[in-house]
Length: 116
Image (tube, rainbow, N blue to C red):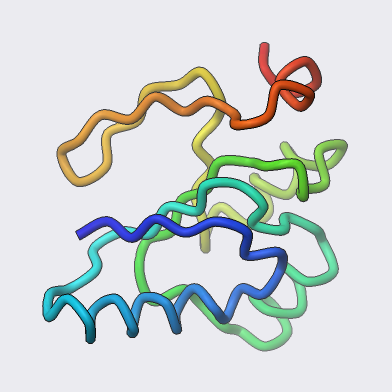
């Protein structure tokens, strides 16, 4: 099962809580998590959660950027935290759980800034 989330806004611990709730409600394992925008990709909270506190997501976790990310530092942050999450760039086709996904942004005003 793929769990789709959005609007995490730097509250990364909620991802694991949502995985546990989904598994409890559905009675089957979550294999993958996809965050559909507004993960909250900012250096300070990422460093605190993943490096200082040494926390990890309980399942492989992917994200598409939203308007609440540090777009100026996005490539650097994606590279620095690739050990704990995976970026799904806009305009790419990705295969997750045997399904093909086309990754596009949800807001027109962001596309001019982030879509090649």
